[in-house]
Structure formats: structure tokens, C-alpha cells
Length: 115
Image (cartoon, rainbow, N blue to C red):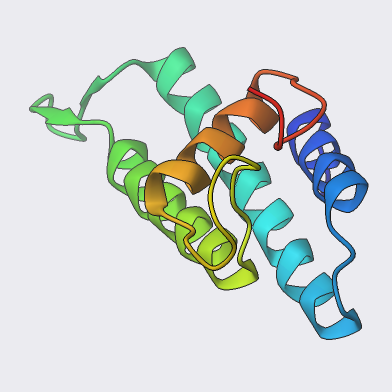
């Protein structure tokens, strides 16, 4: 499954970086995780942060836990790819830079190197 966010992320990465063939597989995984993140965010928007259990008890939406895990996975994959902001020195990638890349992809900014 592919969506607008993951497609834009992939295009923005390929516009800035020239990944090796083995890195394309990792990039595809990052895009798949972005798709999962979007689905989980949609579930939280639709059902809310708090949901009712089978017996009527109130619980946090299980998608919240999965969303946090998916975001952590995405950041780890981005870090493994060595993606970083243009203003950072080579090899100095950070989780914050990866988070910015994810947010830029999510909100439609064309290049992860611009800011």
C-alpha cells in the first residue's frame, strides 16, 4: 500500500540522495512504516484517544501504542539510511533530523534538505 505521504517522502529522498540498491529496500520499508503511521493516525482521529472495551470500560486507544512504535521504527530506519538535514555535517544525523524529515514528508514539503 502506498499513500501520498510515503510517495512524497520517497520522491524527496530520491531528489536529494542517490541511494545504493540495497538502501532502496530500506527506503521502501520506511515508506511502508509511513503508511502504517497514517493508518494509525486515521484510527485515532476516527475513534478518539479513549475507547470503550467490550465490557464498557474505558481504555486508551490501542493505536496510540502502535503509533509510537511505528514512529520510533521510522526514525530508526531513517537514521540507518543516514538521512540528515543539509545544515548538518556528514555523518552527524540525529533523531531530531529524522523527525523533521518525517514531518516534512507528512506535511508535503518537497525537499528534506530545505528548511
